[in-house]
Length: 339
Ligand SMILES: Nc1ncnc2c1ncn2[C@@H]1O[C@H](COP(=O)(O)OP(=O)(O)O)[C@@H](O)[C@H]1O
Ligand SMILES: O=C(O)C[C@@H](O)[C@H](O)C(=O)COP(=O)(O)O
Image (cartoon, rainbow, N blue to C red; front, side, top):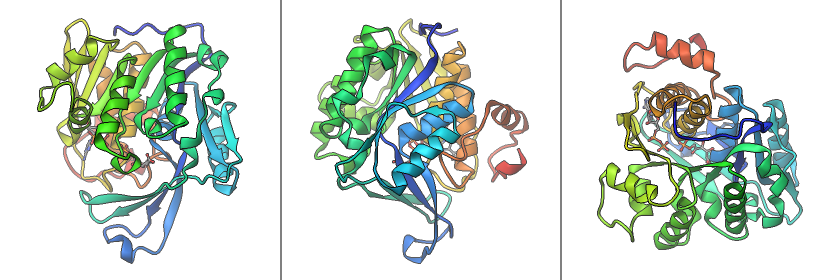
């Protein structure tokens, strides 16, 4: 049981909003980018990855976003279709803007970095008029990702989603997804993130992300309970604060606290943990599980994804997650093909 109320008669479970992009993950791992010659192309973008995660778990997902009018845009649309994600509200942008690219460098299991190509990124061209009230009304929940707040017109489009979701009792999940290089300043980031967070039902972020978010309201605070209370005074019902490999903690409006399970592994790469965790956690809450059980699903999904080469394509179904939890045998490298 949890404290979220989903409108059960709606055909869509979750509409993700924002970035549809491409990840180019180094094939020759454990070396610097300078020595990497080939990359594999995957669907990328945090909300895109989360939409794949929930779809693989059996939820009906949709998307509000923009793709470029080029082969990468067509690749993204094809991938969404192949993964049973409704792309009827993904607009093909004609402005000449480009698909955002994330080149990933996998130097070692713990030393990974992302080189982003995001000038004139098409995802930030999302318009308020791309957000249709009828569509929001058809979903039990929406997921917004903070990066979409980085620039206009995408920023206003996100606020339109928030207004319509609140009007129609569509539950709002907010994954903070703070990517500093997308923003002009940390002050600007904190202000827009806070304005959005005030309208959300469930907020998921790392301790560092909440430190940024609260730079004006709670400067210097590092206490998760104090953070949770701040957003409960607005609209939050569940707050999740993640601490990387150390796990995560959930707080509810009613005063319950949950310590999330963590299944430490020796990863192939570090990225993808946040998106798979969010997908598994949202799925769990939408099954009606308590936050502790939902966090366990998210954590196991994260362990599988960091043990894989991709983010989106590696998102596991529930059977694989359950087998992983059952077979988990301590911190080591896992061959996810064998699970
Ligand atoms: N090396 C790891 N092994 C196992 N689980 C991990 C590992 N790194 C992260 N996770 C899981 O993924 C969750 C989210 O990771 P975190 O690093 O906090 O997110 P983000 O990618 O957004 O920074 C963690 O709470 C944990 O359950
Ligand atoms: O969000 C992006 O544009 C890049 C992602 O596709 C990338 O795979 C990534 O960074 C995943 O983020 P995480 O799950 O927070 O590690």
